[in-house]
Image (cartoon, rainbow, N blue to C red):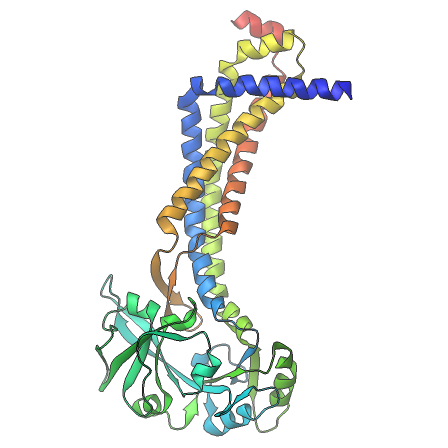
Length: 399
């Protein structure tokens, strides 16, 4: 026990001396801090894109809501259901009901071209046809301006994200698509979910405008509980009148975000890895400079009986401290610059634009700081070993 206490005392003394003299090497230390801060800022900034996109795609994923598509369909774009099919879905066991009937929302999904506010270039924007029951199923949808569209009229309500990103969607504006024109009568939010990137109108009006007859592409269903999903799914998939695929809403949206999420995550990790290699060399240079500047100090401590272990730890601790400062600075910079930044991108599963905000989450900040600590550990290890192996007599003669 006494030996351990003595060893810990040596670690504390050597580390304290190292930190007190660190400001004498502020040039090299500052370069290391800035290098690591840059790496962390880029890592967190790029990955915040993926986090923001994933959040939008999963925010609307209620556990007690299911989506019914045509059998074999992966997206609404390639699905097709007739009106009779949607009635069978609404009568299935496990479907929640209200005074107006089953909480089932047959929906039509088309893509229209609208110019982006920032660039003026056209982008694919989802136009969704829904029936009045949709507002009972999509319970997170809430009007913040204007009113709901009226059935049978060329009126639309616009998601807040779409209104921010695309021109011509302000309240009271006229939305002209081909030979058809709709009035924007309301703006809605949906807890930051995917619906905020869409435009909603009456399904019967949209069917007539696009000559779709009595057809839909999906049915969103509110279940009596999340546990009722299996009963609901089994009833539909075994019904000989139907050829459908039934998925939980949360799982459907998570799958929709998979391609872009993996692409951005992979790209961000690759960029951060390449930059991290450079930061490691910067940390190595800083800590080798530190060891060289402390050669006399280290040799004197060794001559006084200090062990090599405390010397190794003091160098590593200094390297980790610089990395923590750099990582914290980089994470803070990324948070200030990127968190909440509004953008839109293509959802490659549905080929439509999704409006979203960059999201710098605590988990992402923790990942960035952990990466900085790893850089500091690798960058300080070899210089620490060199300091421990420094021959006392040789070091004193050099000075």
